[in-house]
Image (cartoon, rainbow, N blue to C red; front, side, top):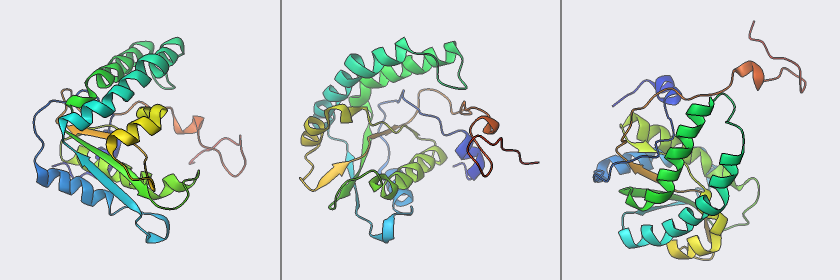
Length: 209
């Protein structure tokens, strides 16, 4: 297990190609415990985590994910420029991996679906669930498990959440497919801090000197 926090942060890439090999339950428990250690509004802990291994449920939800990729998201990405900090070749490889996930999501051995229960779901609601998601992604990386945060299925939110069997007062915020990665972990590709950080006023160039 890797315990170097900053190395884990720098190398927690979206691992979209996963082996179908079973993931031991104790490892998933560690990932979930990391999630429930996260910050959340008022410590009310309205989060709920649905762990899915059932092939039938995964197949039912995955059809909506696959449709969202092939009909909406995939064509949009392919028509656009590479992501900031990425070459055309690297971006194309990312798209190929994303399409692989769309076609094979149901084969990931475990899904974790982070949800919030009760209340009104607003722009700020994610502050009580996405910190848990990031903790789980980092924990998975530390344990040598591949994972990615994806919300693409929410293009068909009503249908997908019905397939997940969620009650009316509960909404999902992502799917985290988890498994042993086919590829290797490596550094993420991001733009320089100087391109995205300002000092005191918007547009004022940042410097740590």
